[in-house]
Length: 376
Image 1 (cartoon, rainbow, N blue to C red):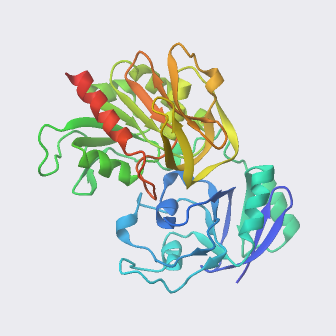
Image 2 (image 1 turned 180 degrees about the vertical axis):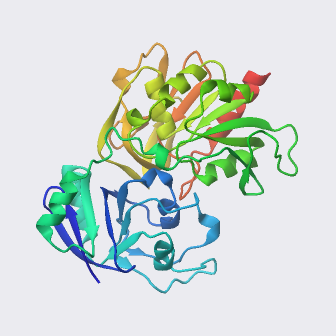
């Protein structure tokens, strides 16, 4: 089935839908990972976006229930060079097309993804529309231009949980307090995780490392969190513009100095705003599993998984209070920072290694060590 891909600048690509009829409008972005497409699709950070994969063959290992990073698929559409409809993997439970159809997400193949990605790298991320319904090129370009976009929008409210929940036995457990302890846990550290679009593997890792995690909506206020008497607060990843989320920055600012804080991706950006800094939109974002990041304290280089379209401006931070700890070796952007007085630190990338790699797992250990130090 013919599908047209139209960008706001008038660029048009023609492909074929492998999921049937559909239409989607969103910000066009690309991901350079060679594997992990299911983790990418179920990452809430992609809310409001259309994802193009640079690796040419997608779908070859199917989809399974164990690799979900949330309870839904979040991109508006998924674009690939070539779709494989016959997966070969002992873990596969269904095809990628079946998976996308279940969640109502349009899948398109059979066009020059390399040309699309090169275009985005030149002009930046663009508002876009993908359709099998409207095949009028001028109409599609006009509709893409008229879309509101992500800048200044609160996308977190689309993905945050409605009610608090815990995490035990590798699954979400409904509950509003630290009442569910996983079997075998002795004196666990209590972590409140602010759900701005959290990935399940972050909860898995903290639980495996001896934490009892309580996930709360992004609208939760500081007094409620402190009343839970946590040993630490975790600020998750999430979609969109950090400056467009009402109330969260003020809430995090109220927590500073009262409990250890660890932020990832959007959580990192929220901390940057809470420190008094500013954020900006990155030209075409960092999305993939091969971004080199340097730890300035050790000189070590980590290969990291990243997915963000905004970043913290290091020049906006008070250097006497905030220390830059990590930088991106591709473009020099800020990838990590810590508060010199309060127990708080953050990174722009994803240390939970879903879809990979594993270089940055030590950051969860650092968070645990900080909580134990403050607790003692």
